[in-house]
Length: 112
Image (tube, rainbow, N blue to C red; front, side, top):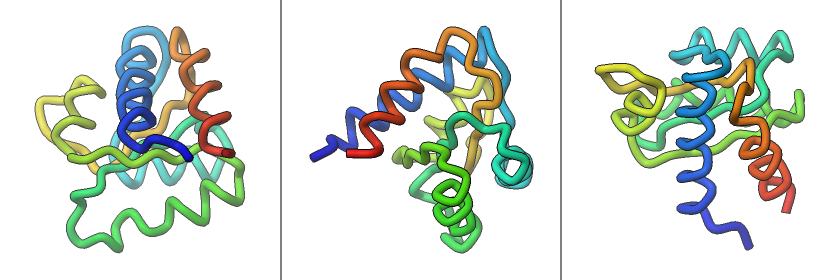
């Protein structure tokens, strides 16, 4: 059984590392585009998005493209990890940078 809190913490760590040394796409539209292109290595979405329909496309898209998808508690913590002064509903890591090992572990845990 995968510990959601641990997975969430790892995802936020990956976003922070990728922000410093890799490349992120922030926001629902940018994240969806990177998933559709197959460029995303990891997608992180917030659970507190309202209306929830905004983030619904991610689950089937990420499954189809075999991209790990992780949910975190709030838009604010996701925005902070991505280096934003405001919350964000979704972030896609498109260049891992130093987050490569963390993303690999998340992908392995997500398959369990």
